[in-house]
Length: 242
Image 1 (cartoon, rainbow, N blue to C red):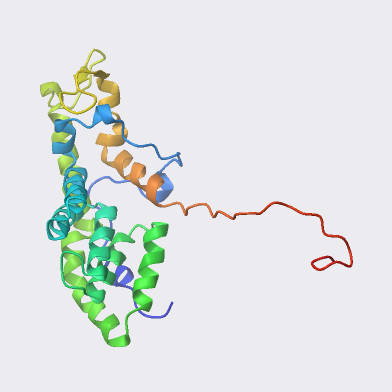
Image 2 (image 1 turned 90 degrees about the vertical axis):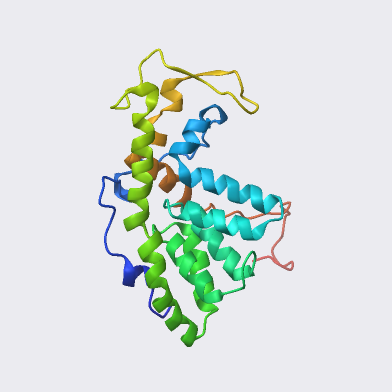
């Protein structure tokens, strides 16, 4: 694909705090976060998921403008899915006026970590722009990257994780004792005890592990699927035979 890329032009470096690169992450099968882990305190320390959940609820309730506002808030905490959703809403004119230039800018941002699905959409959005719009995307993307790129967004999220971890049972260093049990107060899991070792698994609370969790979920290409019909015998000399 010809043309400049905002990502290559604007990336100024990696997070200033300890984060894991793709090569540092063990490849694991992505697993959803258990419902028993999703306590109020968990969402307080994970603003990316908190604002994303409100955005999805607003979409279900037919409030696209509010959904866009919430996705942008989640995007401030390096949530690539929310950044892609902002792009989609600009592309479709949902909750805002349609703006294919900003749709590309936000999808380029969502593809910053080279996640396969977002890269494919980025190429599609770029191909829809004429040369003038492509030049606009380079110029208008500067501020978006300055406010939402991983260089600034990852440290925001990491501070939230660190602060949340320090609040565990009042421990200043975030120590999880072997006897710690967390009881969900709301939802379908209300009243169920969950060991603290599960609720405070490093994958959800330690920055490097949290980014690896996301990488394992988003980076792989979806396995191609080919539907094959019922096999039949074709003899030499018949149509389709060798």
